[in-house]
Every structure is written in C-alpha cells, then in structure tokens.
Amino acid sequence: MAESTTFLAPITVAITGASGAQYGLRLIDALIAANHEVWVMISKAAQMVIATETDHKLPAQPERLAEALETLARARPGQIRCFAREDWMAPVASGSGASSAMVICPCSTGTLSAVACGASNNLIERAADVALKERRKLVLVPRETPLSAIHLEHMLKLTQLGAVVLPAAPGFYHRPVSVEALVDFIVARILNQLGIEHRLVPPWGE
Ligand SMILES: Cc1cc2nc3c(=O)[nH]c(=O)nc-3n(C[C@H](O)[C@H](O)[C@H](O)COP(=O)(O)O)c2cc1C
Image 1 (cartoon, rainbow, N blue to C red):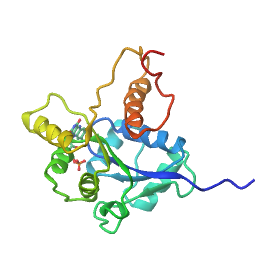
Image 2: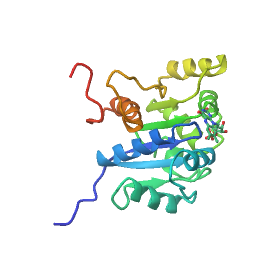
Image 3: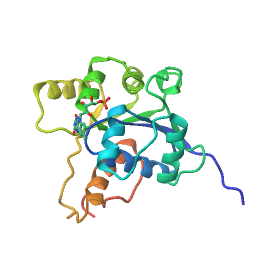
Image 4: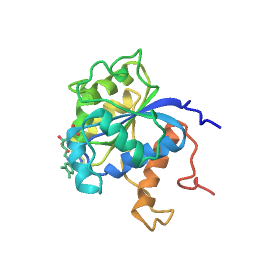
C-alpha cells in the first residue's frame, strides 16, 4: 500500500550558535517521529557548532541541507524544508505563511537579544518576530552561563511578550546515564510546550 505523504502541521525549528546542537537535532528527530512537517533554519554559527560538537557536517545550501536532515532524522521525502539566512520569500517571513509554533533550539544569547529587540536581521530573527506579532507559540532554548543582566532583561521581556524561555538545564532526578538522556530531558520539555505527546522521559510521578 502506498505510504501517505500527509504530515501534521509544520513546526519551525531554528538552530543557532549556542552550544548544545544535539538538542536541536534531536528535536527535529522527535518532530519527524511525531509525523510533523518541520521547517528548519540553521545559522552560520550553528553550522560551526554542529561541526564541533557532533560527527555531522551539514551543508548550508537549503535543498542539500534538507536532504541531509531527512537522512539523519529518517524523514519522508518533503517532510523537512530548509530556508536560507536571507530568504525573505520563505513562508516563515510573514504572518500569513508562518507555522503555528517556532522553537529556537539552542538559542544563542545573540539571537535571544536580537529577537527581544525585534532586529529581524536574518530569517531566524524575522520568523521569531513574526511569531511574536502573530501571538504564535515561540519557545527559546538558551544555553549560556553565567547570565548577564542583558540576557536576563531580554529573557524577562520575551516572557512578558508571551514567548517561553526554556533554558537548556536538564534535571537529574530521572538518573540519566547518558548524554542522550540529558538531551531527551530538554527535548521532552519542548514537546510538552508544543502539546506533542512523547515517551522520551517518564512524566513526573510515574
Ligand atoms: C563552539 C561554539 C560554542 C558556542 N557556545 C555558545 C553558547 O553556549 N551560548 C551562546 O550564547 N553563544 C555561544 N557561542 C557563540 C555564538 O555562536 C555567537 O555569539 C554567534 O554570533 C551566534 O550567532 P547566531 O545567533 O546567529 O547563531 C558559541 C560559539 C562556538 C563556535
């Protein structure tokens, strides 16, 4: 029987240049496994972090990037779409085309600050600006320590604007025995925010 190519609503995932590229890549895996279409943007700095922290060297060109991610995440053809840094014609650049939810994971403090200020200097910042103005779900996953007053002020501002600031700070009460278990802890929290069911980490109390 032919496989259906109907995917659930697209979710936008932006990977920026904070440490913790694995969180973003695992999030894409989980969204693909949940049968969502996934729209991906990867910043230049994130390309460098991915090459440093993982065994993957992802191409920058959007179509080639989509192919590489489809293989990595075992996605079906067409399930992943990638957009270039200044592709202002991409659906995420406008309220009329944007997905209902966007996650920046991991989120560098640079991108966090740019989003808090509405800079829109690249497509990731613009897509987040659109999510805020359209009152769509926006989840930012910063990874930085310690935090300066600049970071904290911007996190407060984004939270007041309705975004969810979800630091990459995994808990240890599930007794993780691997890096993957720590990564899944954060990815599970993100999926909870998106209302997507998962079994990555047992819910509290189970
Ligand atoms: C290996 C590596 C690790 C980095 N780790 C962090 C980090 O944990 N948090 C952060 O905010 N920036 C980190 N940076 C710096 C950002 O990549 C840098 O500020 C960059 O301008 C962010 O650009 P982007 O937001 O467009 O991705 C790191 C850079 C590299 C190369």
